[in-house]
Amino acid sequence: MEFKFDKERLEKLEKLKEEGTEPYGSRFDVELHSIDVKENFEKLEGKDTAVAGRIIAKRDHGKIKFIDLQDEKGSIQIYFSEKHVDEESKKIAEELDAGDIIGVKGTVVKTKTNEISIDAKKMTMLSKSLLPMPSKWYGLEDTEKRYRKRYLDFIINRESLEKIQKGSIMLSKIRDIMKNKNFIEVTVPILQPIPGGANAKPFITHYNSLDRDFYLKIASELYLKRLLVGGFEKVFDISKNFRNEGVDTRHNPEFIMMEIYQAYGDLSTMLGLTEEIVKESVYAANKTYQVKFGERTLDLSKFQIKTMEEMVKENIGVDSEEEIIKRGKQIDGKVSSYGEAVNALFEAKVSDQIVNPIFVTRFPIEVSPLAKKTPDDPRFVYRFELYIAGMEIANAFSELNDPIDQISRFEEEAKRKNRGIDETQEFDMEFIEAMGYGMPPAGGVGIGIDRLQMIGTNSKSIKEVIPFPQLRTVED
Image 1 (cartoon, rainbow, N blue to C red):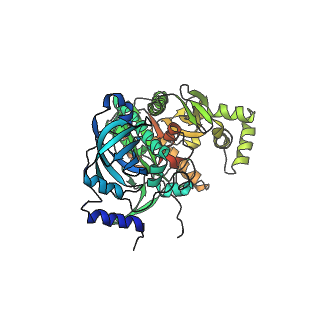
Image 2: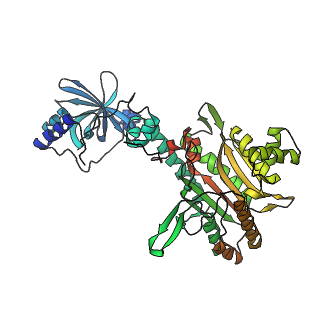
């Protein structure tokens, strides 16, 4: 298949070759980034350094040229005078276009207009761009086009690049926290014979050598709990989950989930740990606990705790269980119990209204098949979900470690599936066998890393924090 590159740029490419210049260079030793030069100008003025990056603008004034060079940290002006450079650099300068990647060795100076610049002494061609760059102002306004050509989005919209950088800072901080608390990071299978650990529709694939269907991981939970049985006490996993569900601003079929399990802990153990992870990772990226999210300012210095039942009753203004069941059925015709009604009303009426962090506690047992029951009311379990800006960020349990009780929970899940509820837990006999050898009491939590990064980077869409999100097919 023939690809059509820009004719004029192809001609410049050939001219560079004819003049003995390699248009696609190799190693170039970068000494400083643009921000380093600007922030340390007083120490660096008059000294030589080496920078590299992509040309984003070029202005010719006869034998003097001004080039705006962009690197990962920002941009800096290159002052190019034919009096100061060698012959090869002069030849290269004549064939430059916006989009080309070059290396520059030169002196740190300020121009007559008081702009910090590099006075070029030698220029090296590192990569000739054969396609013209879109205009910063109109080339990538279409959101879908931005995501399809993400590499251009990062070049042109620096905010997009910075969001990915901030997300990386957050992830590094999370790992630092876990290391300091003596947790060990482990891996679990991505291909699993039974999709367990969450209520979700899985992706199915076929394992040729075993001639058997497997499922892409929907959660790490049941494997991490096996590690608790095996004697590990503090474990966590940060990896991709795959759920065959819809795509919207908060959901992506593959997403990064962190799961944590601590033997001899409980729900309150996970609550404190989750608050620290959320607060400190966002702070690491923003240097403040008050962060913008759309039109709102979120305050991550304070976390509230409320029960789901309490929040539902406050929202609809009634205490009667009969009335709550009635209203729950109006929301979802499959509701058949008080717990299911409370959950349906919370999801439909309450969750989207939450702004600042709230730990929502005491979940109905019907939607929590892996959590311990509360002793005062066995219809509810020790579970919380953390909500911020209307989004579920984390989900935690005092983990069930009674294998007999776990069997009955799996059996109840099968009944729910028979009633037409698709997203239920599969019966995992191997997990039951592992529990039969004894699993210590534990606290466990799953944290949606992508959603947490949305909070930390002021991103209203999950696609903003995923470098290459899934998109619908576009017909040619």
